[in-house]
Image (cartoon, rainbow, N blue to C red):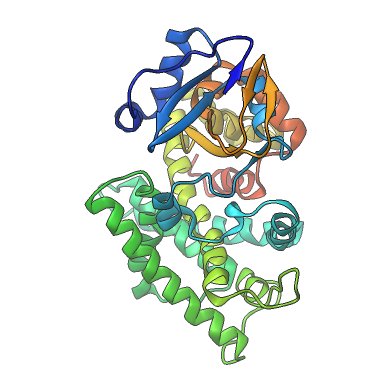
Length: 358
């Protein structure tokens, strides 16, 4: 990375341990100390550019400047994303695969998801009345696992819930871990993908009936740009990409409970407010408690921004936490205009309201 202005450069042969140690504050700390929104460091044995702020976010999501393929570390693909899933694609292949996912986001399908979620939360709330205490996070994961499987078309017996919840939870709880936690995540991915592959095979062989508008059927029977059915392993990865994020909403459920606890006046507003207020509240949860501290991409082709030249192939990290914390007003307006809030997230909070959880 070169240019007429010298970009600040963090010293050290490799600063990966600092990233693991500081987590969410790694990039914000250096943006503050360097007094800049872009700096250079070394992570995972390679040069990396770290950037943050509203302008940086707009540049980062320009598909002509950055690509996702090859950006995520292998250990993240082995746990969180899976290999050869939609997150690793670019260009026409990415657009085609994304359309498959978006076909599941129709108003009717989202209304179905809302109905299932509401019933699952109401059922759980009734059971909780007979318990002295609960661990909200663990209970939330089970509720969302039941919801995800029912909505996606997966048969799930009561005796399977704990096992599948644990496996899907391990995927998003272990992506940046090292040692035993990381290997637990990899083991769980193998287990859950094997289970999903068995379901796909039954759908393709017509030995199991499921709705043709379900995620299980849609992805099992999806054809690529060459007109071929997806490799069964890749189809399993993409179906896990449906189940895992819904279960992971358990994290935002806990953040929602925390936010309401710290701001008790919001509870009544959420119970009596309109959908627009709920929408704004959910956006605030996403802003204030981002799921991950940063996202990664690689420079697609060399370009210059703010007098800095981004060289092709360079690993680039966008500071989600710092950007959202410092630019929340404009970010909220921008994301609302872009419609970036997913239907699942809006409907989740609506369902929590209807079930009187919040």
